[in-house]
Length: 75
Image (cartoon, helix red, strand yellow):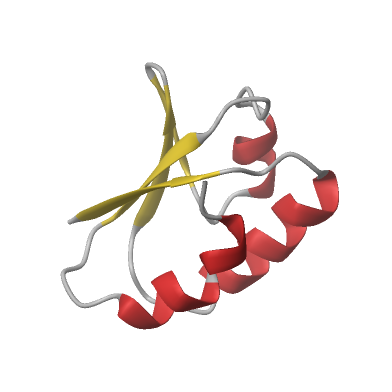
């Protein structure tokens, strides 16, 4: 498992982020405080506090391709 912080401050960013994450077969969660949502769920992401960086947890050890695609969203 790998964890990185992401910043999704605009609605357009959330849509682009979900489109990128959905291209990969990995299970990916977003954690904000004690709330955890599926990173492939648009509505789930909008239920989080997007004003703060969010921890993205990728349940795979070899996910460099996904990490390079989401580099613009990394905090």
